Structures are given as structure tokens and as C-alpha cells.
Length: 210
Image (cartoon, rainbow, N blue to C red):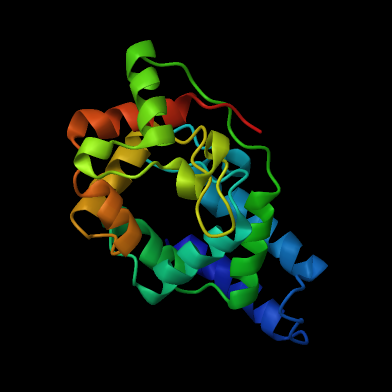
């Protein structure tokens, strides 16, 4: 943590010494600084180029930049309250400038997403059905309505394809108990049974890169 804060603090000082960029621009210096932070610090948990191999930590490669910015801002403001956000990311994000957040998001969005991994065929098939159609009898809407075909996501909804099942299950439980206070996802997750969540997570993990 101390090394990270020292590194980011030095980078932030460098960026602040420059003229503030336009809102829709990221300077070459900021991109280079973000790559350094990603390689030297973020990769410890999220893997090289954001392709995490540890199922506890999410893959970031190929994620939508607007979504990444929103999550980093939530960590920085301490408004995302799941256990790992509190334990890891609140402290990690606290020294990040707005420009560094935008540059990190752009860096990870530009990386090739992770490939899917095989799992139990029955669970994957069940998860694919829930993802595409929901569970009408339980009032659960289809995931595809927000996360799109192939779970590729949008600017506002994250890419889920190829994400670790363990991480996805942890987040679904956080939505269920409102540790992650996101109304739309609480509404979706609150009635999901454990085996349904496991099936959806297995399906999403099985999906390949774009």
C-alpha cells in the first residue's frame, strides 16, 4: 500500500503540474503514467493487462471505460461498500486524480478480454437460459436486457463475459444484501437462489473474448 501511494502521489503531482486537459482528452503523459501504475501495482491482483488469474479478483481487460471510471470514483468516494471494496480498493483509489482514473480506465478498456473457461455443461446451459430469459415464475428479469448479447456490456453496464465465477457470485451476494447499494441489481438478485446464481456465474465464465 505504501509503495502504491508513493507511486501514485508522484504521478498525480506530475499531472497537476500540467495544464488541465479537456474533459474528453487524456494526455500521452497520463496514458504512460496509468500504464506504469497498472503494470507495477494493479497487476498484483488484477493480472498483467488486467487479465486476472486469481478468481477472487475481477478481470478488467476489455471492460467499458465509463463503467471503470464509475467504479473507481465509487471506491474513491467510499460509496461502494462490498467487502473487497472496503478492504482493498478504498485505499487504492483514494490518491487517484480524475485524469489518472480516466487514463487507467482507457488502458484497461483497450486490452484484449480474457477467454472463457469450461465448466459443468448442465450448469452452463441453465445459466444461459436464465441470462437470456430470466425466471418468470420468480419475477427475475433476463440479464441480457442490460448486459447485452454475449454479456459484452455497455457504457453503463459491465462486460461480464469471461469473468471469474467466484467473483461474480461474491458480487451477486453483495447486491442481494445491499452491501453494493445498486437498486436495479438488488431487484434482480434478491430472489435468485444459490443454484441459479451459480449457474449464471458458470455461464458467464464460459463465454469467450470478443
